[in-house]
Image (cartoon, rainbow, N blue to C red; front, side):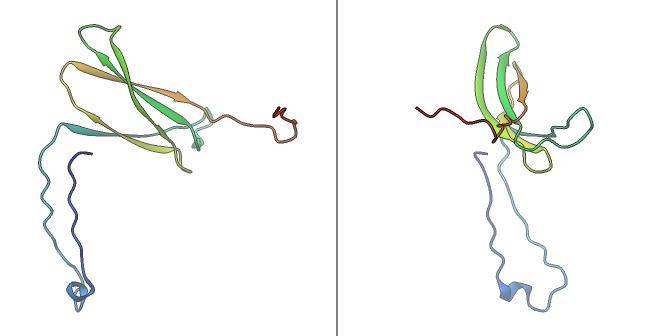
Length: 109
């Protein structure tokens, strides 16, 4: 994200408190956070799946741009930040992790 806020909380501020309230102010942006979970057909989370984010123009469906990718965590969750534009759609292409059989000798020459 282009804009963020940082607030340091010191031990002195936490002394004798049960609850501490701090205000954090962010400037409004056109960024949108897309989150999700990748599951198998058995509804099990898929770790290390790759999600490719592609921006597609609403005016010209052939105008596509790869923006980047994300990899799912242990629980199959991912997060991607994109810019919000009224004339753009976003497509997520999801690829399952590549499984390597360790018993197969690989020719490295």
